[in-house]
Length: 484
Image (tube, rainbow, N blue to C red):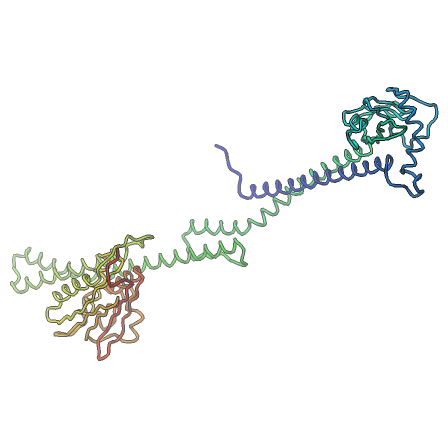
């Protein structure tokens, strides 16, 4: 199995590769630019030598047309005898520079050498200029200089008209003036590129080490949390770069996990406290029944009936508490499955159950059609909890008023009401007002109401009612007619 490189090694390698490519591209571009500039200069010299503008001395100055006029007799002589092999006149001085070659090309494309001027290999482009088919030809080629040395040259061939006979003249300069500096430059650029690769490799390692230092700190913090489960660990987050954003996001995540674990521990502690009371009462009552049966002394019928009624009530309280805990422990769904629910029907069913639980109470209901998107079971449990809360705090023979109109459900009782100091806590889990500690219940009913209503995008409030009692308001988004 191939082992992957570390992130630091990959960053260093990528940095070194990028710098090396940049250096190589710049070196190649510099070499080609220099080459083009040298060739342009060589071509300019060839053009000035052959048919350039007049020099400082006038038409007959160096490089001007007057030079070709002075050479015309030698050129015509070379054309008349047309020798292809290099010849010597025994004198030197017509063409300055040991690397210059001059040659005549006749209309048939034959090479006619000029004495003491070397020879060139005639190409098809040169022959086309001599025939008058082309204005000029500029190319690289090979030739033999006046010293008999073969060399690579830059050749310019241009037409000449003299005595009614068309022909062409090829002049050449040695490419050593270009290739030599280019070779030296290439060696220098290779050395610079190699040095650049080494420097970039070292720079890549330093950049990777400096760039990944915050990542190392973050990794150390994560490993510490995984090892110790200490969610209170925080990473310093300075600046606005990606690492700082990652650190802040990580701190927010650990904070949320710590809060979640704290809520879970609090839920377990509160649930254990609430379960202890009914379980203790159940155990006591059952022990009394078992002791009476073991001793053979039956309890009076009335006492036995009261014990069984108490056991049943405690079992109901325990079942209700377990159901509330299961509802609160249900994980939030990322995309809950919702359906259209007739809220007025849910309220009517909850009102019927409230009348059974408070036989001495009057429950007045006025519901108008309202359809919402939600989970039917959770919604009905929330409405039942809301009405149970009103029934529990209503005085004997009291009245509970329930109204549903335009998406707002109100439940009003005429009980003792809610003190202002208790209002911020009424929707907290397991919280119960000191004045209601003696009443049955676990303090989870309103928490479930707040959770269900919040999941459906609604809101719930509990406030003192005018004339005494409490007023609960639930607002749920929906429509007066069922949705398709």
